Length: 209
Image (cartoon, rainbow, N blue to C red; front, side, top):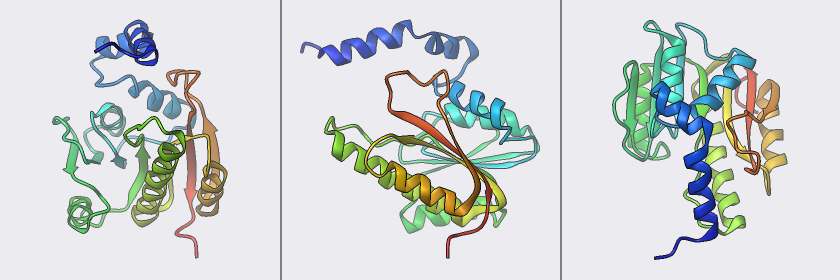
């Protein structure tokens, strides 16, 4: 089957991508690792000894970075619908965290400990229909924010991948309502033509009334 022009372009970009090459050299599971590294360099969110939750963690690029940053006295609790190979220092719960059984398994793993930082690089399976993909992405983001509001400690932080489009402004507003400070980052490792940006929210105020 012939590849489409867009998939050929993606392959070409991927093969020649310096971040893909660097990830292979550094032993990271995905080029996305560098997005979190750059965000953390700027915003100093993840520190040694912290408890971090990684939503939509597979294949594990962000969990790898978080585990290194929190060190052996910190913890990373990760979850994804997809399986993820073991990472030292990461406790992984597979399943859809909107399902009660999976949510309970995550809560049991946390053992009532409040979370310092919730990170989410989640994206839906792309259908190619922009409106549907954007709606699916915003739905995942609402779920991630809801989870963050349930597990974060006061003054905790939240990082999430957001795509510009329908619902973006309302989502930023919703995040601002429950955090003291919200900034938008576009890391160098994020492809220039991609609509993705990262919301970095600090100073969790508690769930909106």
